[in-house]
Length: 463
Ligand SMILES: Cc1cc2nc3c(=O)[nH]c(=O)nc-3n(C[C@H](O)[C@H](O)[C@H](O)COP(=O)(O)OP(=O)(O)OC[C@H]3O[C@@H](n4cnc5c(N)ncnc54)[C@H](O)[C@@H]3O)c2cc1C
Image 1 (cartoon, rainbow, N blue to C red):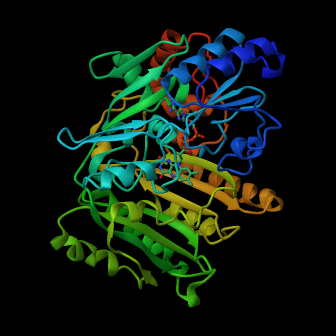
Image 2: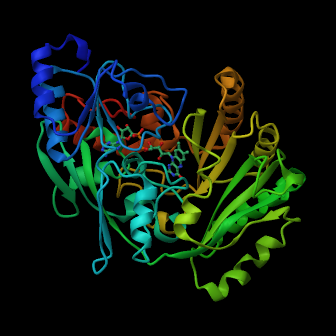
């Protein structure tokens, strides 16, 4: 495995690499090094030996050849959102794709070709002007690369599936430096593996996505006081199981931020809520929401028509980069009354303003794909659950970590076993195996074929 610190590589070799590189190379001590090594989660503090901000595919090939020939540790950085900081590494070389953000929509074919360093806000901006969207996440600053390669769960999951269910093709630079395309008709094994298997198989320089006519959505959060949490959660569990696929909603415990647009009497209140996204015929929207609005007494109802990119960036201001994040996750098939009670206990004890729990539905269209059709295995689960302790203050780290761990431990016996790879931190091989189940051995075979020396190991590793 390549694990030589970059400082041990002869300076002539590094110099040769730099002169062949077209993008920007950043080293420790450079004025922009501290900024460039930072990732979204401020808990991560890694110091790479070199950050190679690629300008194009040729740069990616040059960087892959350099790390392979010199046995240097390498990480691939897309949007830099990964909880465990897997886009960055200590002492090695970072293939930083953040300058590769080209996006091209083909309105006739209803596809978008997206370069590997784009974030979802870049994609929504472009596709929206054509009246289209493709399934992504719920925060616009998340990278297309990491989110898609792990699966991709968001507001359009029930209607249009996971991001990987809308992926038609990828361009990949492999460990041996070859550039290949993987899709339904070429390198099918690689295409199967990248749909859920993360960044294990190479650097994806571009993604081709299917687009859908989604433009204005009827969406937003509805919040309730915690004394109604049991009624709301039980309603939600039964509703989302059978609801028309035009509607998506993720459940959350949250603290209302102390500022506009939230009314003052709710500031800093711990509440529960559901964030909705309806994409059906507009004339049916009010009718669809009638049973939802009859649950308990909603304290706040922000649901209404809005452009799809507005929904996608609605929560960006609450979650800027630079906060401390600690994540734990599970897949969930059924939400028993006992599990609801555990949720309410810990949801009522959120340790900070930013800490939260989300239950994202992964049914509807996402259930129409079989558990062995893509590397993403938990197709029969109803939810991807994530518990995140979040706080700006590093001194509060202990508190948010222990709340997250206690909450997760109490609920884990009620879960399906594995967890969504993109909601895990570095939890080790057993958790990764539990996540891929009977797909793990096939992933190993693909890994052996395309990256036999495990060059790409800074990820939820298949090895
Ligand atoms: C605030 C926030 C909100 C989120 N919301 C959602 C959500 O709604 N839905 C959801 O599904 N997930 C969500 N996530 C999780 C997200 O999917 C993961 O954090 C994901 O890893 C982020 O991808 P990235 O490219 O930004 O990360 P990075 O840290 O850059 O990379 C993550 C991993 O992916 C690999 N990788 C990235 N790009 C490439 C590429 N082009 N080729 C090969 N490998 C690559 C990296 O090597 C690394 O292992 C959220 C995360 C955060 C922090």
